[in-house]
Length: 122
Image (cartoon, rainbow, N blue to C red):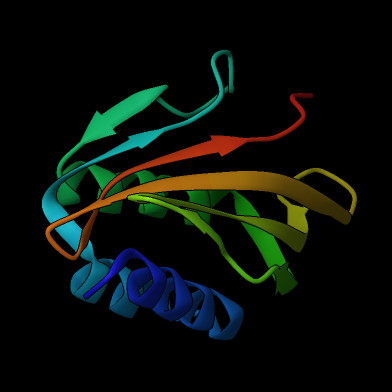
């Protein structure tokens, strides 16, 4: 798949909340996931699908209720693409809020090999 095709599929899966299908189909087994430095409760960098899945489970355990998500159309530049996501979410012990983030991905050989997320801390 081209970078544009991977980007379109990822956005489609994110809009429908099909995270497992997205990672199974679109990610390289050795993909890297990078969070904001200083994000409490998450490692800044994990490598490999097992570690990415564990990070997802960790995030799910912190969620009280997921109300929805807005995902922009992707912007593609060479082997990179980005999109914005805004999750409407209630985390355990916190008020409901909309969490905006910028997501940047790199594609090689038709698979996502890295993802990095940018969002406000605190």
